[in-house]
Every structure is written in structure tokens, then in C-alpha cells.
Length: 153
View 1 (tube, rainbow, N blue to C red):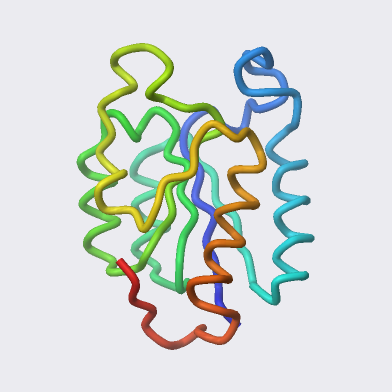
View 2: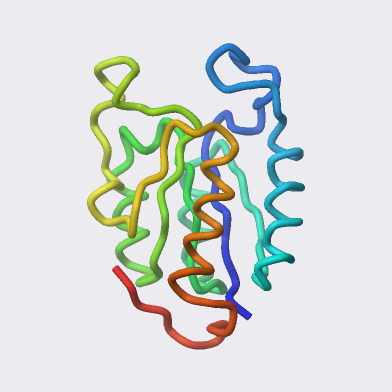
């Protein structure tokens, strides 16, 4: 079974209450519950990790106990060369996700250290961005890759 790590960066734990006019009213827990249900339908295993600390995210990636990742790095997308290096260093494919479209927001959000190394970027679709990424994982890799190196970048 393909094991998918959903890795989420700073402030995503505040979803539902943080600027709902921008990020919506769903909490991270509600998004995770929807993803978990969809993963079962797609015959995928999904694990979640959110941290407000860059080093914790990097340490989690270093565990390499997954086939593919869905990464919403939040603001670290625009600042973290270290996170980029970790994603390159672990040799696991990933799909970048953002609830909003950073290109349509503040100018500093146009810098993206992850897009060029991601399999694809899914942005601006709210929580549906995560579901689309999970479906893309299933389409690309199927459900029978855990324990085998997955390529695709």
C-alpha cells in the first residue's frame, strides 16, 4: 500500500480561526478527516505531521518512512532553502499544496523554493487542493508501492 505523508508547516494548526476570509472555516482536523476517508477509498495509507518549527518538519522528512508526500509548507515555501534541501535529500516525490494561490497574494509570496522540485503544485482550491493531491498520488503510483522506492520526479 502506498504510504503518503501529509506534511504541514507553520500556522496551519490555526485553520478555521486564522483569517477565515482567506483560508476558510474548516479546521486542520476536519481537512485531515476528509483526507483520511478519501485515502481509504483510494486504498492509500495516509499519515499527518504538522509543526510550527522548520527543524521538526525536516526531521520528519528524514525518517523516510513514506513513499510520497503532500507538502503544504505554508510560509516556509517562501523562505526555507533548508526545507527544499531536505526534500531533495530524501529522494521521495512530493506534491506541493496551498489552500490559496500565493501568486495572487502579496509580492513576497511569489518566491517559491519548492515548486520546481515538486511533481506538481496544486494551489488556490482550498481544502480540495489536498484531495486533488491525494488523487494524483493514487493515479501516479497506485496503491502498492510501500517498501519500494517510488520515482516520478
